[in-house]
Image 1 (cartoon, helix red, strand yellow):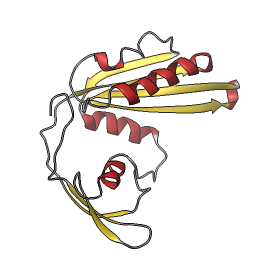
Image 2 (tube, helix red, strand yellow; image 1 turned 90 degrees about the vertical axis):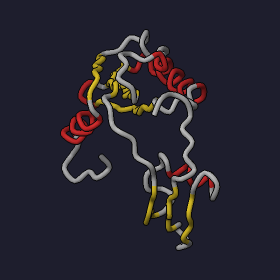
Image 3 (cartoon, one colour; image 1 turned 180 degrees about the vertical axis):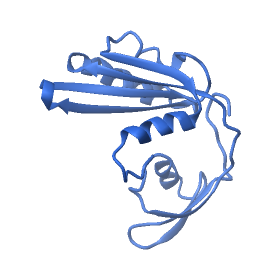
Image 4 (tube, one colour; image 1 turned 30 degrees about the vertical axis):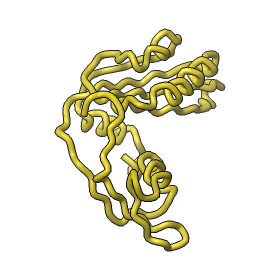
Amino acid sequence: MGGGHVSNPSIVVQVVLPNATVVRASENQHPDLYFALRGGGNNFGIVTHFTFQTYPQKQMWGATYLYPGSVIDQVTNATYNLMTRQTEDSNLAFWHTYAYVPDYNMLVTSVQPMYAEPIENPSAFNELYPIPAMMKQSRIDWMSGFTDEVESMSPRGVRFV
């Protein structure tokens, strides 16, 4: 799986759209829907079949950064830059969330950068590293280790993990 954009026209998704139309989406058929389904969860229809190529799993790098409200603009700008400047690096993934903590009357933001190579602090996230954080944790682990961690912190019954 190396760096760069991964193009695989053999990936095909069959989906039932909200209007009950059944379509097959790929890079060549309904490419906008195909692109949206790759990260849009269940917002675009019900996936009834998919065909894809698998790759051997290796360890990867992942982190969790928790930032105070005072740097939210910096973090938001950095994640915007990640989305607009790093779009061709297929090893890169991250989540950016905002939360209000009523017990402390505090607005916080968190970023969970992930990189599908076992590289400590990959350069793709250089813009995040200097921003002062309340907490920074990172490690190299198997995807299953990160998934188990998220699942253990989620309320029972959450099915997205």
